[in-house]
Image (spheres, rainbow, N blue to C red):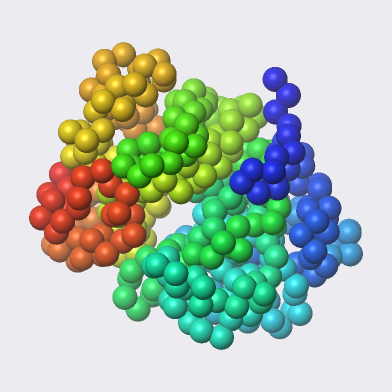
Amino acid sequence: MNLVGNWSYPTAIKFGAGRIKELPAACAQAGIKRPLLVTDRGLAGLPITQNALDIMEAAGLGRGLFGEVDANPNEINLEAGVAAYKAGGHDGVIAFGGGSGLDLGKMVAFMAGQTRPVWDFEDIGDWWTRADADAIAPIVAVPTTAGTGSEVGRASVITNSQTHVKKIIFHPKVLPSVVIADPELTVGMPKFITAGTGLDAFAHCVEAFSSPHFHPMSQGIALEGMRLVKEYLPRAYADGTDIEARAQMLVAAAMGATAFQKGLGAIHAMSHPIGAHFNTHHGTTNAVCMPAVLRFNASAIANRFTDAAHYLGIAGGFSGFQDYVQQLNDALGIPGGLAALGVTQDAIPTLVEGAIIDPSCGGNPIELTTGNLTSLFEAAL
């Protein structure tokens, strides 16, 4: 199979191995002449990042780099990124990396021209209309992990460093103008990142499929996304150089982020405050929470997941699907509980406070309360 394509849904995507060389053309397509490449601290010095900067420089685009992004990016990172953007006289952003680099890069492009604080644009009601849309800089996104799918998303997750609350910042124009999805960039991911990011994509699909909201397009995308993860994540984990598996996982990640326009749920409502307080890896945290959430939501989702299990080739209906999820976690080295991630019993009331106000709550098929969220955290601990 020739895994190469130029797609226009949900944005312009240049998909295929080796396509990072088309970065200058992507910038031209987005109208960017002096980009700032934004990435996380771990990636900033790696060969794939330096190669991207070399490609930029050779094309006369400079080699502007902001590489001071934390694993769970916050407003301090954002302020520093905006300062670097303005100081360098940049006119657009290349958001480069996993979820943290992509999310923060998108926010630098968004906030560089705004006068209000970033928290004024949280994904609540029509708060996004407060932004000056004309001041949002163009974005080219280059994912280096197969997980969040932030490259095709219209929002970013930013942690408030003072309150330790993760906020979802939304604007339609935060959707990158062009995406370069090159699976060769994901080959170097270590096993635990391959597992955690891949299960993040899976969680997006599972929660979108579970959501009670009406969005048949997202429902179909979520189902096929689950199939791709089931087939290709174990292969990518076993052999990081399996380019077909890496490519299919990159597709699954984009599909998960496209599907969750239908909604997320308790997995993400729990994961966001855990990450904010304990600085855990987001996808790994989702994976740890998933079995408990599936049990909790069983009465509302069993029938639809019985159908999904049949499509996925999993015997035993919903019960078989639950068993499969636990077996997949175990096979990929995911810890059996939140305690292994450093979460403590005495933190549960604080985590519940964060979870109950998380926007993801609205997509859970069973209404979330302080009481049942407390039980969920205890079950996942």
